[in-house]
Amino acid sequence: MRTSRGLLLTLALTPLLAGCFVAGAEGSGSDAEGGSAGRLRVALAVPPVQALSPYSNDATVLSKLSVAEGLTSLDKNGAAAPALAKSWRQTSDTTWTFELRKATFQNGTPVTAESVVNALGHADAAKPKPRVLSDVTLTAKADDADTVTIDTKAVDPVLPLRLASPALAILSDKAYAKDGTVSPVGTGTGPFKITKLTDKSKAALDRYDGYWGGKAKASGIDVTWIADGTARANALRGGDVDIAEWIPTAQAKLLDAKTRHEVPSVRTDSLVLNTGSGLFTDPALRAAAREAVDGSALVDSVFGGYADPAQGLFGPAVSWVTDKRVEVTGRAQAATTAQVEAGTKGKTLRLATYTNRTELPEAATVLQQQLEKAGFTVKQDVREYTRMEADLLAGKYDALVFSRVTLLDTGDAVAYLASDYTSDGVYNIARLKDAKVDEAIKAAAEEGDTTKRRQKIMAAEAEILRTDAVVPLIHEKVVQGISADVEGVLLDPRERSLIDVDTHLK
Image 1 (tube, rainbow, N blue to C red):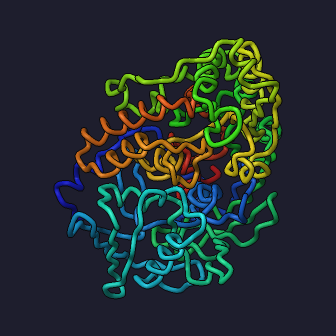
Image 2: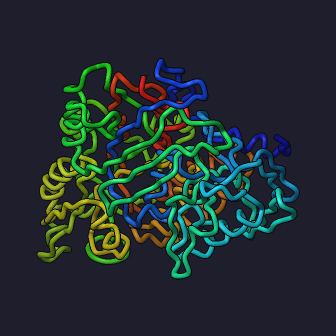
């Protein structure tokens, strides 16, 4: 791969936990060409929001099941690695050139520079934009059949990391309908092809034998979405599925030790406060909520020890943050209990959370008790995530108990900060509009030097925490359930990967 010296530094960003991925192994059931007769049965937690559109939260399903790919991917250390692009180089501060490998879509047509330009153009024009494009505008053009040049409106030193996002997967032209919908059914490039999607409950995938990276060892994947965590664990224990993601901590110790796999995660659970409308437009009430809640109380009581008390927006799985924390200053003075009662004037604090992560409703109950002691009157709204996402983004709640993979979108923290906390961020559930926060995130986004970029990320974190728009609670450790009959499952701290060409039944 050809890279500039600056890019070599950039690609070293965010080394996460070398060795956290489980390498695939050749099983006794594999045939001479690397295929297996066995189909993998998988239970996933969050049902599709938009029929597996890459522009929604469904995007990670496409990467977990190896359905679609971007120009780049992330290796186990969080660096950009070749995917549909076999190499790239930076030709100016805002211009990059990517050389494509020989690959085909799952309908057999070739991946060309024009198809890449089409896919990226649709992503950039999508409304709302994918989170990964919150802070960047890109333009792609085909130089020849196998070469794509991408220009960014502003300097973007981590573009190769950004292009690894599942939201920027390259799909064939037929994926993009005139009404703006996008379907990955049979239009991806990965080793597994979606053949059937049944509402929000099931999907069938077959092996795509034309995959450029070789034939997968499993012949297919049968997916069932089971929102209830206990039901997912029971499905694994009962032998109904081979892989069950996100085992609730209360169920983890009930699993056989051979099927329980703990993964240090970049997932942080927080109390997100709506600063745009309702009670928490008042900084003093936000500060009162921040002082009232104690995330450490959740570590053992709710998460059974599978968590660490929050240190900030980023936890111990992001190894470089430890010695770079910036002191948070300038916070509002917290309202007293009497002031909270007077300031809320009998209004109810609408506290939301969702059932897809089993611990969150229990955590919300603990937080409700803590907030009520501080003078708030609290009412919970607990539903399945896909049924409440639109209301969350529309600001219909005062607070949300939220679990967020902070390095999900690019492997670089800036994309998360931009999408969740800038004034025009597409996933700004806190509805935060703060000029100092915007400036701090912009400064981090423009910095190409690794050390300086990390320090500016921590400065941006401090500015966000200053506003009390978010109160970090705990850093999770994810438990994945995997049958002893399965080999090669990917244990990914970023929760973007699960099954690849090497995952198979023994």
